[in-house]
Length: 73
Image 1: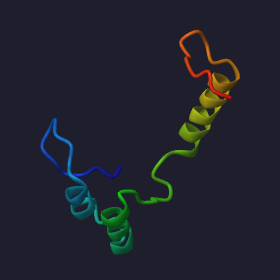
Image 2: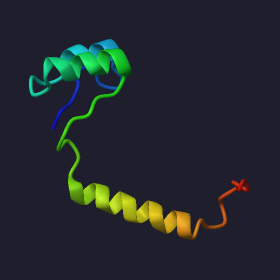
Image 3: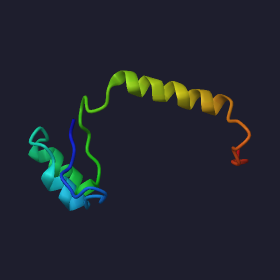
Image 4: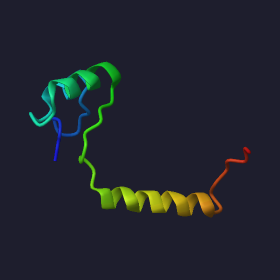
């Protein structure tokens, strides 16, 4: 698992995150994060987890429930 090194209970700055990730990130990925604030890391999230999230989102969109206040089109 990729984790930035920072003090417990503090969020790293984008610069810290771009320069302290595990060596499994390429220089290009670090540069993309430093410039864009995001980076694509293939395989970083389990496909089954993503499928579960997608199913949950689909259920919530199909049947939003009583707490939804979005009345837009």
